[in-house]
Image (cartoon, rainbow, N blue to C red; front, side, top):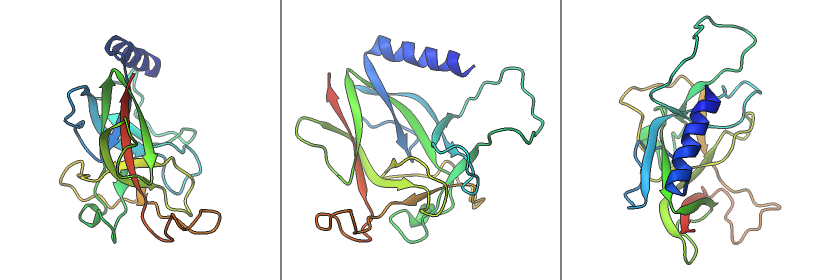
Length: 196
């Protein structure tokens, strides 16, 4: 099933001549003429206390199942919905709320996430900017994502289930050079595109 979905998405991307990226924390893609929505979904990953899977995924809101077996089994990889864990930060109002996401197609362009930037380098176009987020430093590792600066909740429900969590990333001066970095400063990020 995954291969069929992936093949269909790749076919769509090839026809449109572009690249995809996930806009974390939003249900829509940026209002840029060459960027369009592939699907909207919810952020998910392995439980923060489990040493298994490490990557955040943007699960679509319209899943399809093939021969479903909805009995819980012990020998499985598990995936959980994600929440903002931000009680004292830029996203205080979103603390413990579930995280939406959108898969965006950037036609005729390639995209890159640049950490520690609020703007793009010369010749690049800003798709969106935000804050670098990942798992808490004592939890099993997750990838870094760029959470939109105008992040929103998946819906109005207050989760606080503490299964998969997004924390802001801050710098620690040691091998990380300060300056230009600042000890304890939350890191920003920018998702940038350039025409092929």
